[in-house]
Image (cartoon, rainbow, N blue to C red; front, side, top):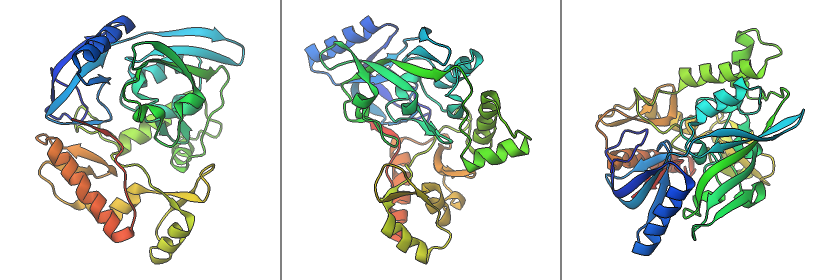
Length: 330
């Protein structure tokens, strides 16, 4: 069974199905339990590096549907099935006058994948808009998890460690009145260029799309998974010492993480010249070195080898460990 993935890597699973309802997912999971097979639920493959041969039973999540379950003058609760395309979900909610997701436009992938890595962009994380997540647990039972149970943190959640939990839908708590988030400097600059001094959610949605399209490659033309590395969190004294020797270094204070600060992985990679290095199979995108692009013939070994070379270079020069953003399927 071919495995869909936005890196366009040649990858197949020995067994798998496409599930269109919760019962089909449960049945597939039950089959795997009874036959001792590893089970993997997958959406659009937007945040994975798939090996050529994947030993797991792959269940492609084809569950669809978006519906309002409760609303008030101030907010609306919206259930989104795991198989819904994320960007289309953002566009749909905005068209209905349900606000909050506009900063998360054009992030590839499905709604069910959004909580796994706690997707975020331009000052907004999906964790701040999730009310609950419905899962099938490792025994095949449906459960509802509240936000605290999801253990969200920067680009992380409990779902990264509990791979035996299958997300079937998410419930979003969205605003009925505009409350835009425009603190991100790049977003402010784009809005200013458009003479948007008091931007609407729709204006923010358009701005985010402009920025992303200018900076990030279209996966249909240049296959990629978006950011390949997380921005590293390091101790503030370490960052200060590093900046003493690298005055160009940008340091971003973080709320709620003690004495830790965030560095820009893209800046570290850029300083080492990786955007300008020729590569036959894999390369850094010129406008954003965090994005690794499959030039057309790469397999998982080529992608991971290229990524490891970058990680080793950053560690050698700056003493900073870069963590991969996507999961590796094998």
